[in-house]
Length: 342
Image (tube, rainbow, N blue to C red):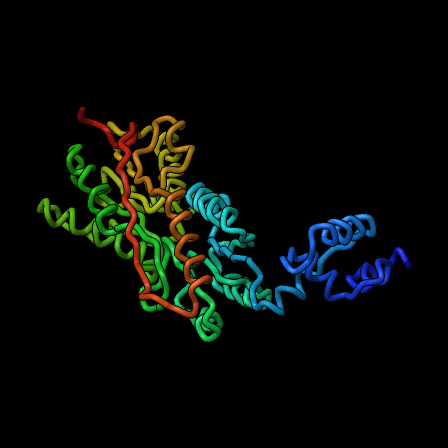
């Protein structure tokens, strides 16, 4: 036998002078084949270096046991922890996971979604990019009855399971905490409100101000991508106002950190002169000085629940159920950056 040629079940059958169908059944542990025959066939398959053609098998079965995950940024603690939660459940259920990041770019997200579709994933878990306002690329999956689960940044108009937190409540309690600490003129650094996530956080912020009879001032609300550079530019813009703010609720911890760094550089004390609350509880938020008050999302549990929903959908296509939107609990973690009153 030519060693450069892949070994097939026909080669094994020829060596043992039996039918290829018997070899196939034995390698698949068919109960119709005796254990002695199975052992003999598997021993020869191992000796010859036989490898099953998984791709061909998957095409025949219309199933790849593969899940796709699309996140904006893998290096964010929330998303990496979420992925870990998905993999915990997927591995136990016999599924492989393909992980991709959009870098918060709509065009890259579209390319990734098309690629995962072409590679015949059984289902996909997605958190939208900051630029995403159109959803046609997800129709590929819907039309072929391939399950989707959205998390964190979701599109309410898409029919799919969704894993979210109550972003309105998060925005409200972060702002209320700053008010309770004595801050009077609170700014908000928001992400793009085309995404329901950031819109709801901003609405929660505005609601807390209104409840406490504080003015809602549009010049104190800045929209950007919440990068470190965006955070620094935003605080410069806010401090240049005729009446600058004395606190800010940031849409993530990255922008909150950059604001703290800048304020330190110009001699403004946090929290004595300026209060800050972030979002997501990145690992650095606990170890920087001052440590950053933030909203913690249960990322691991969100990932586990997303995987459970998706795998259920994959394995019960013939008996579809109503789509679910599951809201997970959050926690306000109070640290040094906002704490002026014990």
